[in-house]
Length: 282
Length: 259
Image (cartoon, rainbow over all chains, first blue to last red; front, side):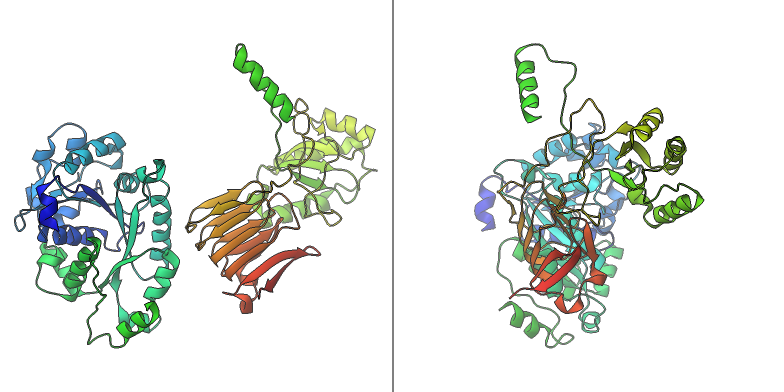
């Protein structure tokens, strides 16, 4: 499928990774999905919209290679090509870092639109790593998106914030404002999933989360020390040593591509859960 | 009033634009009804106690002083009363049901004389009433009647999410899908939710006490009809997550399981 597309124009699809709440795993997810798509041969760029709190480049392990950034490009101080950082592990992967010294007012709708239009000409997938909150940075990250991945932890405040963000995706975006445009395709990615805590009633079940959010489930990422370790060494989790979180992200990427992949979680730690899940959904 | 609006608008379209427009306007005011002619320390103490309970609700609220039960009130007391109310951030602007002597004193104290209007539903002796209304400025003639609910219903076919507010200014509001916690539904008429209602639903928002709320699965934070409300804590536990209708009976909010 990919080779067919590659012969023609790039796909140029913009996917925003958003959540409302902070600390749920947006940047980790952006890095993992970006690397996962690139690993499959798609030309992918990951953009950091969290101006002033530059994190994506650290998670992607390229923080020492930042010369120009997204804000420099928006303000005409650098060319896009100068600011894009090519990943050393995957030649199809690029990172567009943000500025650590500016704030979100440096982002303008016209500037973002121009950068995204230029990226669409070259890349198959443009992953926008949204800042937390629902202010200007988050709104601009989602405004031009074609698809959205809403990162949610199985706890009430995260679910409520995700619900709020789903409302904004359906009302405050280009696709929502344009007459006759397809709405943004939004899916929820459940991260930091801990089956033992859910069994103890300390966290919400998958069914409860999906019932509230009423959007399709892109995947379930188990809570795993491998995620933290990969972040600390600057390797996207899908490129690190095999882990259950890494394979869960690879499955999520496959579903993002439209493939039908069954949900799987670490079988020996979570007996009965899959049966319960499928028993409900079947 | 609508005809005036239309003609003014037409004329403006043909000739030069006018520097002003007369518009009919409906809004909600609070009526402060004196239950006796005694405006003394006890009166102010009781008023302060009430304001402390719900400070936000009354903050800068436009207030009409209703003297129906205070016919014997000494007109000389009125300027002091107005000052007392304004000192409490109550924007007293009008007086109702005043005797001629009281009217004169009220006008001298800066209040306008407002003709008797229908009361909002919170008044015990009020029948099914339209919105509380009054004409604040004399230049604006009072609109003839509160608009009747239009027969059409507003239809929402997508989930109503946290932070969203859907208002049906006329008639019913129908939601096919869930209403999240933190979302708000407001309708002049009935509210129907085909999905779980977790947010707030306010039916009969302009005073229609016959309005009802229907939902497939009740898990609401707050339900209200014509200003009478209940929060999740006072909704019967046995009706939670069931199909329920909510209506007003004898000024009490009643819940009943459906089916």
